[in-house]
Length: 139
Image (cartoon, rainbow, N blue to C red; front, side, top):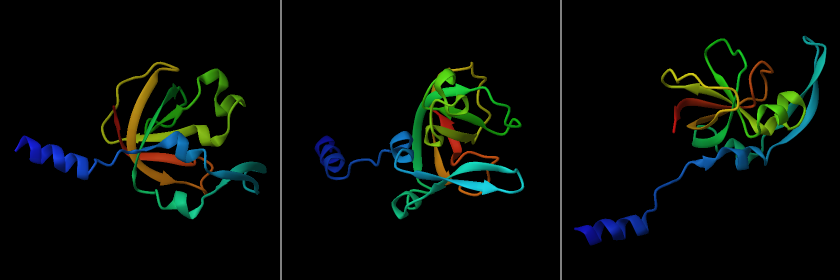
């Protein structure tokens, strides 16, 4: 029986969740003017390959950023606060908005965490990140 299980695992490897940062780095952005805000924002141009990943599980390991998102979500950055997207040191592909399936513990600024969730892509609502993980769990 042990041999049968070992053979099965060799034949059918478990599907590992996608590394979110590698996936997000493939996205290109273009500036777009939003008249309601009288401001230009970088808008993602999702390729078919990226769009096909929507709804799949993605994992990101990064730094918790202490932004008030109304208590519904948190922001995780590939880089520490001093070098993050909001401080001008990185691009929009380096941040993700996380919606947990259960209430997460409190985090400290720049605390490194790993989360896994279902990828949602956003190219319309500038009040949210371009990469969102829904039903996320802390690993």
